[in-house]
Amino acid sequence: MTFQWTENLTVGVELMDDQHKELFSRVNAFAESVAQNKESIFVEELIKSLEAYLDTHLTLEETYMKQYDYDEDDTEEHLKQHKTLRTNIERLKSEYLKKGSSKDLNQKIQTHLCNWLITHVSKIDKKLGDYL
Ligand SMILES: [Fe+2]
Image 1 (tube, rainbow, N blue to C red):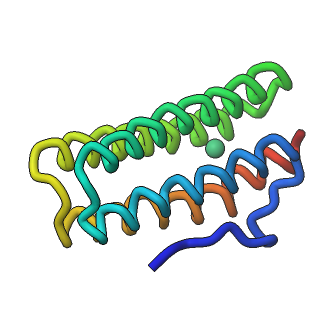
Image 2: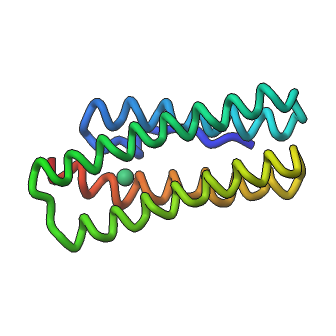
């Protein structure tokens, strides 16, 4: 099962939207390779590149919030969610490195990454996009 970026996830800031699309495709590539039990070195590279890309993306949004004086409470909530995602990715990565592909890991990718992305982009990022 893959999760696609759809028009209703548009936040109206081109760079953010482009990066969200790329994130969806990287999360899917990771999820698919785990599901298909691909070679571990390949899956490892995917997680690492996902993590690096994610960091670039979250940092961009965090810079926007600071630069454009985003509401303090909204910033706090937004940063909290970013922190959760960073932690989740880190946890999934170490779980993969320790145990390799598994049904359980696959489930977690879907629960943590895909659901997080959809919920976060459609609510929190959209709010930021409206402000910008
Ligand atoms: Fe965000």
